[in-house]
Length: 407
Image 1 (cartoon, rainbow, N blue to C red):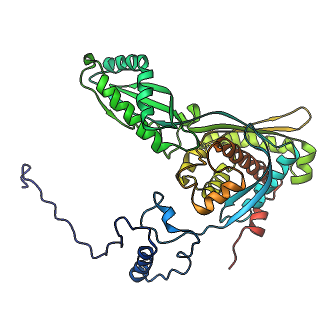
Image 2: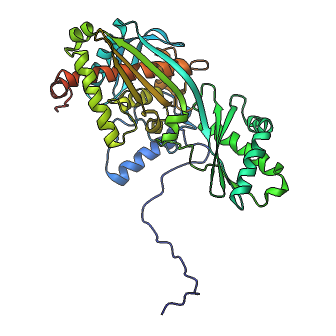
Image 3: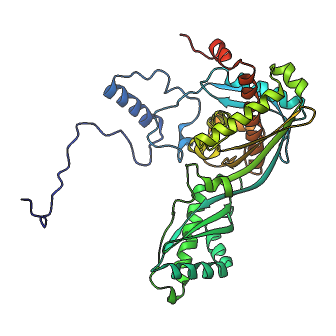
């Protein structure tokens, strides 16, 4: 019988696989990049004919990637013009979209044509915050509740401590949720033109350290975890739908029946009935978006403009609401409660990504709200176009005719 008190010894297994070539402090130089290209060809037998070909200085990749070997090239198309009736985005825009899905850009362009003929996509940004969600641990639930009272009384001090780490981020408010002997919080920051996840993490950590150093003794033994997971970073959640993460954007338009029949061969009354079915189906499935395909437009724009692609998981959530007017015109609105975008920092300054943002006059400081509105307008265009294609019976036909890559 095995002795339960014995200490097992771990013997690491040796691997014959070679380490990836790197040079500390020089990992972005052309010579070491070439060494990694040769290495992967030697190790896998795969010749690199396209990946090594890129047009910019590899030094600009610092902070965006490790062990670079080249570039993944994605087809980039242009949709538009998209007429925007926003608070920040006004006028017509040409929208760069990166995708490998045939018919996608054609469909979005058709939706943009519709929006342009009805006066544009009207957009309203309700709020915009980024979160980090520390959770504090106590001896019992009463101590946790007492901490909540203390924290609210010291919000100004906590805010000051958080903002010592950033010249841009501002702590706006803190949500609180008592569960068991824990006090879950959700620190909400404004983040300028950056998406701000890392900024908020650093600021929240500074705030937590101040809290721990200034807690009253009668709270007993207290610890904290920097993220209690209710910030739901890179994941969809219902709390984001209710309280927003990133920008909460509403985009809306009124679609005249005659125009829709002329441009799409879909009747607005049929489109309204189809929306009723989709609402029921979405509820049955428990979907995070009762619309059509918001993720298509968001992902295409995110890849083109250097956004954090994992944020598509949160940003694609949406709430579609439609009304059939007495004259059979169709009011269509879409609320994106967690649209996470940036026009500065991250991947937005890389060569092609910056050019794509500059096409829309959306690169740099003071541009993030404008870009958020353009993303929302693009998504609405895609929703209207695909929904009308389904109703008109053209969805499968168009993909079969134009969307198949036949080598």
